[in-house]
Length: 250
Ligand code: SF4
Ligand code: SF4
Picture 1 (cartoon, rainbow, N blue to C red):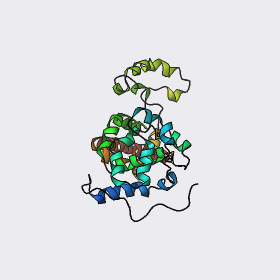
Picture 2 (spheres, rainbow, N blue to C red):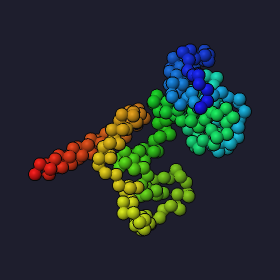
Picture 3 (spheres, rainbow, N blue to C red):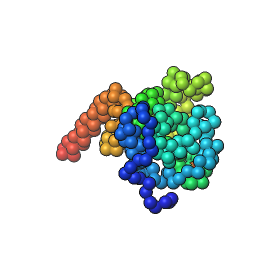
Picture 4 (tube, rainbow, N blue to C red):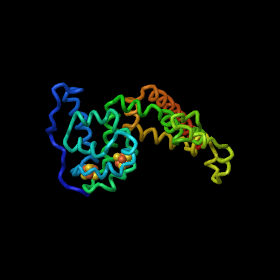
């Protein structure tokens, strides 16, 4: 545990320029959403501006990106800087948390960036839409089957953006799959089978926790497709329950 007091305050102090990219109240709302997150207080305890996080950050070696800069923007409540970083820079982080292991203040720059990403999604920022669009197939697979990436999706056609090395995983999947001993894994349509009851429970969790609401903000078409799939599975589950009841009555 780090500090016991809270940094959350009524007034956000940083001045913004005379002609901010967005009205000050919108910038404050975005910053306030970041600051209100339960993790924020734990993951930002101060900042020496020492740069250890950036020196050990793999993403900083390849992109115009510095966790030190992001933490400084948050620590100094630089509303415009935070908003600007949410347009591109926050999406460079690999979420490896090397920075969190090294920071002498016990900060987690990677964790703070995760909060900023979630707030970018909540506010339907274009950067979030652009970054998440290529993952819509994965999202559809995950929500419709209860599984993440299925082996039959790991093909050059599905992941052209992975570059030439993707061809190395173009393998005889049916054969390889059959070689795995557990029968439930012998499928290439899904990573493993998820039964109807579990699927319906997962839908409820995604609804109640706001995941589907976030999806609607980011990709309305995908949300519609997924809603149809969910309705269908819920109907199937209700029918299955009815069948069970009829059988018990007999
Ligand atoms: S979690 Fe992100 S910011 Fe931290 S070291 Fe890894 S890539 Fe860099
Ligand atoms: S390592 Fe910690 S204290 Fe140093 S710049 Fe990064 S966040 Fe700030």
